Every structure is written in structure tokens, then in C-alpha cells.
Length: 226
Image (tube, rainbow, N blue to C red; front, side):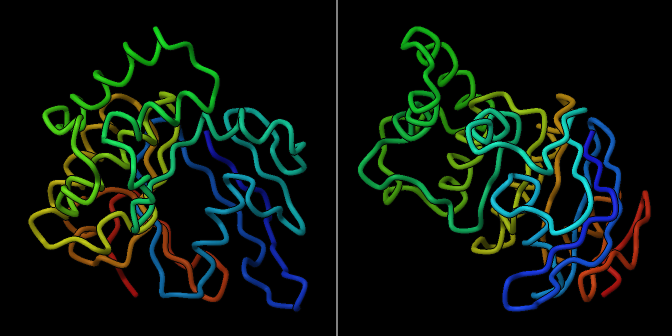
């Protein structure tokens, strides 16, 4: 479960990015977080992964209060939350297989475990046949699949996809959204942060809209209203 209790974030320059936001996302939900640029969506995501700390309020993640999480515990938190970005953030000099394996190596997994996990994840996202290929030899959609595979390597309970289709055409966009829905069926909580009205409306799932740092809309089978 993700729970935000009266969260406010004020940056040192006085900018109020998030204003008194309270929110609860149940395990296994698929939620779209929408809003124009500068409405607080990115700040909210950064607080969930402890990249930023709230000025006020509490964040509960899986029963764990991460509001004032110690720096030493942040890597453990991030193993429970997979994050996918618009620009893929793949290592150009490593193959598809090596990109996913590297995430596990850094986390201290044994080679035997890596050898078991990586092929499973690559098959799940439909990119196993490209395991020995480098990122610049892949299409944008394929690169995003690798990015998702890397985010899933730790078997996180939560997957945050921050504008994952922003650089993709309509065909690849649909394929990535279908993949996120597939992952959600395995009881992984998915938070999709997006500007894509068509995608949000086609999902027919919960939609949370932010404006001026506040939640202005939250419906279980919502639409992109902004």
C-alpha cells in the first residue's frame, strides 16, 4: 500500500510544489497520475523513492514510514519500487542482458541468482531474443522494454512509470501500456505518470489529477479531465 498523509513539499527557493496532499493506493492497483507540467507530479514521484523529502506530512509505503528514511536504508526501499523513465537511461556499452544483470550486481545478488532472474524477466517483457544486442541497435519501444525489465529485476511490489511512452509512436505506446497491464495482473501496483489523454481514457482505471500542487480529481474509473 502507498499512503500519503497531508504531504507538503516546499523547496529552498520558496516554491511550493505539493500542497497538503493525502492519497491512498491499494496493493495491486493500477493508477494514472495526470496533470500539466509543473503541477507536482514529478515531485510526488521523487518523494516516493526518497529522492526528495517532504517538508510536512508522512509517507507510508508497505507499512513502512519512509518520511525520514535514513540514507543507508534508501537502497532497500528502492528494491521495492521499480521506476521507468521516458528516456530509458540504459547503459550504452552494455548489452540488453548486461543492463538488467547490472542492476542485480549492484544490489549484491549472486551470479547464480542473476543467471536465473535475468532470462525470466527478459522473456516476461518480450525482449529475450535481443539479449545480446546493444541499446542503440534497438527501437524506442524495445529500449523501453529493457528499461521495464531492469525495473522489475528486483521483483518490486510497486512499479512507477514516469512518462514511459513520451518518446514512442502510437504503436509502441500501445505495446508498452499492454505490458504494464500485464505486469499489473501479477499483483504489482502500477503508477503511470503521463500526459497521454488517449492512453489514460483507454485504460478505464483509476485516475488522479494534480493541479497547482493539489489533487483535484480522483475517480476509480476516471478520465483525463485537464
